Length: 526
Image (cartoon, rainbow, N blue to C red):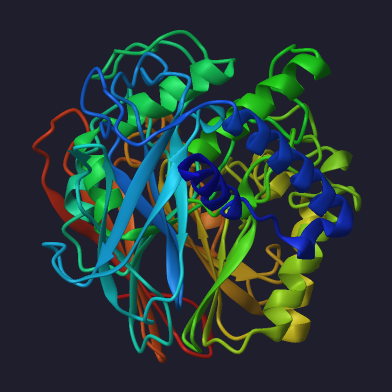
């Protein structure tokens, strides 16, 4: 009876959304869930397992906040760098949510299953909470107790404080930025991609404990686990709810849809993407509606904070067409202007436009991966150089977005971006070739947590600034995160940077601050 009850509770968590793929998606999901139920039922569900070590080595996390609930995450991994070290058995995991950090005023509790099929990760959808308030949570397995995490539900904030981050190459530097971020007064963290890096050992960084390039599900699990062992990353996850999306390195550098960067066969890369997507889901505080089905995973989604802010979280890797002009930094070829080229795919593009059109929020945030603004990286008038992995390689798709923003005029569109390991601020122009054209929005590009921006590129980028007057700020030297404060009348972005990524004791400072005023697109230096 206990087994069937626990399996039923676990299965209830794996509901799939019907609004994306309709009946076909439901049937696919039902088939997956039936298979999970069958494989789960033939194994005993252990309520008091024995572990070779502490099972909560990867910490705890929460995410996808709603007015009445959040997702709670952990993964049982007593031997995190060797597959987790868990037996091929279902494990009963208990969870609690409380009103206080000492976990004395528990308001909800329950059980779920950690199964081998999902790497003994758990994703608990908690509902029935009060809006706009802090909660604390923890997990228990047998006599083992997890660290206590803190989370917050959403609602109609009068002021919203959040930070956005990206690009945390383990080998390249320490995550000291996360130590400082965990101490900030925030309601939320948004991760914009490159949570892990897939390649093998590189020289030059302070941390070299890493294996060869990852391909299999076991590889991706171990790489995610390695990153998750960082105490500063764990602290940042435990301090705030996170909203996450990916970029390319969660699978393969500069991949596009089912097209790899390297010479893998289509079948081999499809299998690799399946493994990468599953491991990503297993290690993120995502709702079970995002559980991968084959090579697909539902990741674009929307979060509303009353009438103050709405976040449109994009996925610009899974559905994009191949990069034009053989990828890289180069003059644009005709394919960069192809009307059929897309970053998001048609369905996601329409979802974005419809959401922006219906929004009643003061600030409409587009959280996405690669730089949206145009940037000619060569200062010489007779030469142009564009990064065609960015939106500069998908000009027609960008024009469709900018035309929509200009014609439909959703309130205060602000784009937050990662990927490029450097800090930028852009006015988004209807026509980048005409500085006098209307500004349709603002883009804040955040630097990396630890991934480098190549030093030889800094001077050429700075030299080209005068030819790109819509770019209000650039810095390639520092790593860190962007802290944002939103009120009904003002958006402020503070570029918070660490003094070093090779010292675990680096200090933090504010490199620059910019504001956007309600109803006046474009950034102003604060």
